[in-house]
Length: 146
Image 1 (spheres, rainbow, N blue to C red):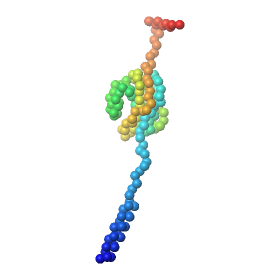
Image 2 (cartoon, one colour):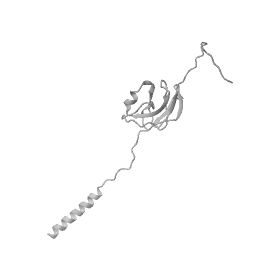
Image 3 (cartoon, rainbow, N blue to C red):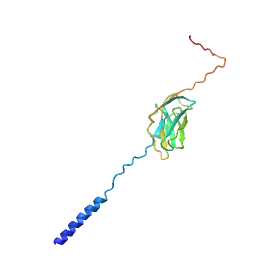
Image 4 (cartoon, rainbow, N blue to C red):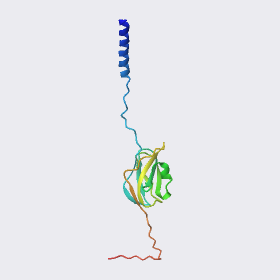
């Protein structure tokens, strides 16, 4: 009986040691996050915002008056509230035209190929309407003090 008890104890001890050796370590590798960025600037509707994304996909220049919770909230906004451009190379400056946008403050969002939406860019772009002067000979009064 003593031999059987010793065999059982040795078996249990061996299993404990073996099972401790099978513990897997957690990965400490950080996940890659989709990040959109824009160069801070004041531009007109005839100029471009300079944007980047950490992944290829699409970048959206969106007026801060638009509440963004998903891609549909961007694409469903009025046409003069956002523009987009394809990001064909990650982490590379890409020009995003401001044509047709209303004046205001804009942030950039990125959407990758899997449909993941980034947070708003930290920086923003201030957009001013590009007014063209019309000197056609009618009501072209100009004055200056001084």
